[in-house]
Picture 1 (cartoon, rainbow, N blue to C red):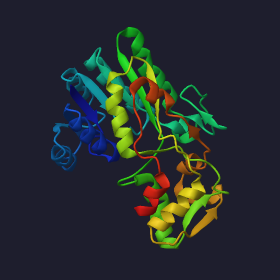
Picture 2 (cartoon, helix red, strand yellow):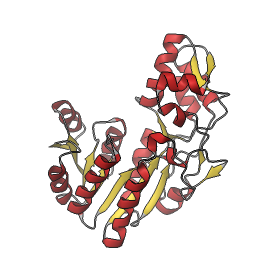
Picture 3 (cartoon, rainbow, N blue to C red):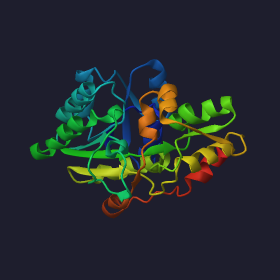
Picture 4 (cartoon, rainbow, N blue to C red):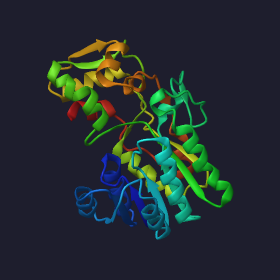
Length: 285
């Protein structure tokens, strides 16, 4: 299958292009710079020069593809919806995979699935109208699919590295917010990439939580990260107010208590996460 990918040079995109190649797909990837173009070409994908604001480029690239995987992070909901619309217009009836995130569910109060009500922190509240519009294309002959990844780990591990590991190395202990008993719905980046590939055969209007099904507490993650960072398990609690001051609005997302099941993707797509011990991975990185 000929697949057009946005965000192909990023953390998730790199893993997705590798997974698409493993499964025999042909990939073209949006590249907003020479550096990004070289990165996707090194992965075996052809480069399409442009950014999310280049709607004509997106429309044309989608028109020459059989499927689209939209991974690039938009700056606003308006930008994301405009890009999604341009690509869905160009693609027609092929599978269009749009990226959301599990943070939109807020605190889950136990284990939930994709049908849980939304209670998003302000950081991701803009996603609702975008996803509603994307899914509405199913009624007009489109084949939209939403993937909502959990908190990623493995490889570059960017969010956790940026907001916890790097500051923790400098401070001598890895922080967690509050009592640290909030659960994190984690997913390994390689497992998530395999979900995107599997979702190319999903039915129009499908929604999948991209989670590994293992949700350790933030305190357990901090302890494992501390070992991986050479800090001998040292951790420290910080208040949400302090986290907001240090991290900005994303602190409210890290403070969420989330447990989400991947059962739907298992049942409908046969997707089975291979990484089932995230704490061991954190302790080794």
